[in-house]
Image (cartoon, rainbow, N blue to C red; front, side, top):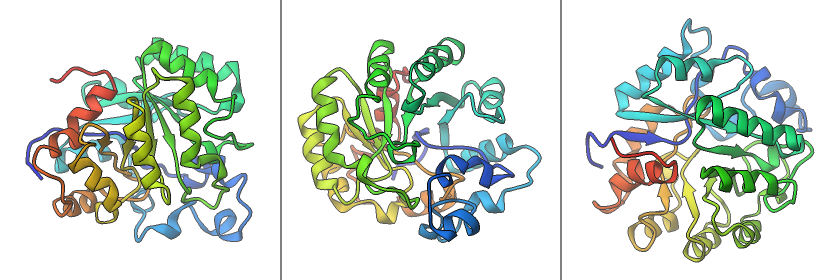
Length: 291
């Protein structure tokens, strides 16, 4: 792993004091007692530590994230805007050169959601839209036609969609995130830049086949500690997929940057893959010029 790459993290956030409120959009449809009553982070059973729990009560959560980025060589981070507490908006105002704006959208919002994309594009210059099929309520599958206006607007604006794919960590039904559903979307929207989030497991082999098939399809490593990166994804990056695999962390939700970067050097990427994985693939997908 080279030093001084200027890492671009395509999934980073800020600590929140009231985690249950932040993740209520997920727990409103979970049914098990742990998710409803015990967990503050709905997927915390999957992680040894949840940094956000330890960082609650910080006076300046934006400074916390910037401090971690500086410490671990992250030059830019993709964050959400238009959030209820306004943290993302404030971060962009304070550090416009460090944060890249994106917007999460629920397809159940219909045209209100599309208008919010346009408003955020005009206000903040968002460079991506995020969707969480299993986390919508009611659930909306990757290839559901309620998703299609979002995909069409992303194509029109020239920005990618980052979409969770594979079995979700929270105890939600996984059917809406079956990787096979991506094929229909890419067929109907050949100009769409589609980036998967959260692993695509247990369908990583299928994800690779689809990335070979569709030029606009990419994979990001969000929510996975580097020691658990799927071996077939690493092999793909080292062979035909060097331009397809994009770094994404999970700070402060489930992983610390310290853990990610400490483990990263043991990932077996070839030398030519590292700068693409850590930086240039993200800049290209997000439509940002190299500084």
